[in-house]
Length: 242
Image (cartoon, rainbow, N blue to C red; front, side):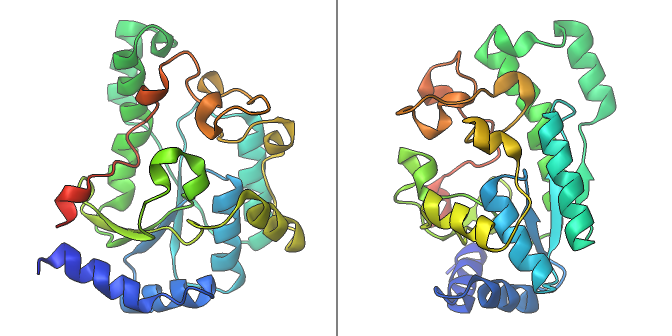
């Protein structure tokens, strides 16, 4: 059995399916200083942040500030820090690389081609993520099965071969109602754009509200084909985990 599978199996054994706080506490104890939560201040990430902060769990929380976020996202970030008085570390794009990209292609070149958009996503999100995960062993995310058809068969714990890290999705099987009920019951700060039809919230130029009946991801990169809608943060390669 390879090391990645051993870590995956170990994390699975540490999880209590009925108690997320206990599960995260167990993981944080077994992998002291090596556990992180990435937050975009979505409903899901805010719920998990609340569990971590409210229970004083030793998990580092970070966000990727692309420089093109909604004002409401920054407001949610500020309200979260004010409420919990806990640190959220921000990772930013490499200034030199981003300056060169914009000088060559302009600030809105992502509308022109999928290649440009993916390059923009790489500079603003993927490369900063790589820095945020460096030296870590467990990455907690807010991914849910309802987010896309491709996530219904996703395991709650999986090995990410691209980033060489084990990922734990504590809310994977939660419904949207369960998440929003938890937010309301615990008075958790959340992005007000959710009340205006925004489901998946990313960079301002690349996100719009969704219409009734539209797919969860319809509001992201809406000018592209549905099968191209990934930014590179969550890459699933099941074969690599064997």
